[in-house]
Length: 158
Image 1 (cartoon, rainbow, N blue to C red):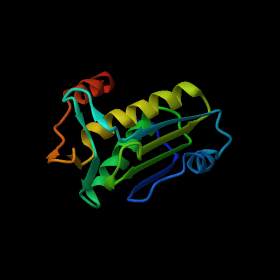
Image 2 (cartoon, rainbow, N blue to C red):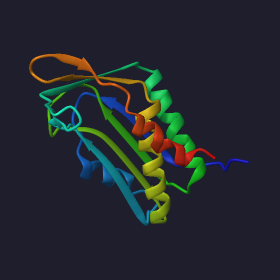
Image 3 (tube, rainbow, N blue to C red):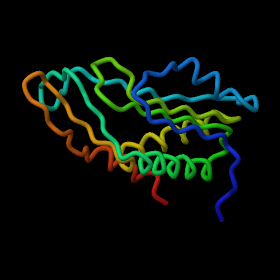
């Protein structure tokens, strides 16, 4: 039987940047003992292909993307004792060093926050409907699925 959760959940898809400090302050409800964050940054170089990345453009399926992320977050809330979760994913054209994704998890105990944040990020990479286009300055190409992301979620399958 899954446990009932009462976590505050905030899922946003936006083109604007986000302020990590501001988002952490919002997570400080119910006097959490821990807040764990993941902040993804646009890389300027693809080591596997030995190519520069001038920009990354993200597209999504409005409505469906938010719903899928909410499903992922709800699952994390059923697995761990969490008081709040925020997921912000940016869309549009982003440049190297721009923030792309924020996952913040608050809980009374650190391990719940660590595990839930890791879980949300692993599933976000494989389940949320985003499409990425890299531009190296000469050509644009769709970013291919990364099998390592698929391997990462296997640890969460029970």
